[in-house]
Length: 214
Figure (tube, rainbow, N blue to C red):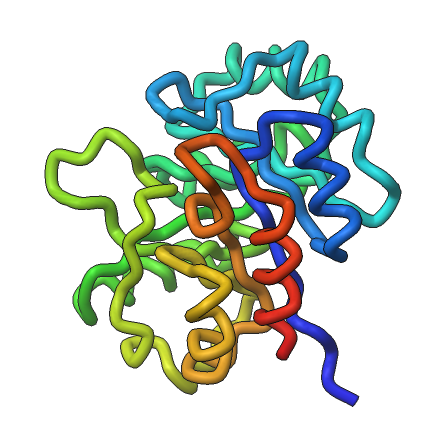
């Protein structure tokens, strides 16, 4: 029996979103701490969502080039299981964050073409997980959640020494194909299960989780 694909639903805004993730059988919920994002959440609201999460739904904080002060404020208030670094953080910074907060760290790396793949390797020794995402468009404000995918053939059949998660433009309609083509054991979605930026749709969350494991 193969293990089912693990699913992360990112950019939750309400307690209903948390319930929808739990009911659908998602494994991770993502809380976005980035002011420019339509999915940005303030710390007190994030705490409420994290406390509403049932056991087994891992709580992930997405941050972009955060200072220690920002991370101190988030981790002091919000009960978390993982930090997701989604900016230009160096391998040294990833190691620093891990050491300071004692939480597993997922590092997002944007892919547009084959030239971007070596960047992944520099994080294998330091990050607990890698999020393989589509590179944002040139001049784009958001490092992720843009609804863009990359050519999955770039990573088809690759074996990496570190757990990784596929992100970028995934939807209930294409996630099964993406899993089949890349061999991903974990997938991440944000805009693909929304009615509008930041507004999650419980039915789409359910469909996405089912399709990812189909």
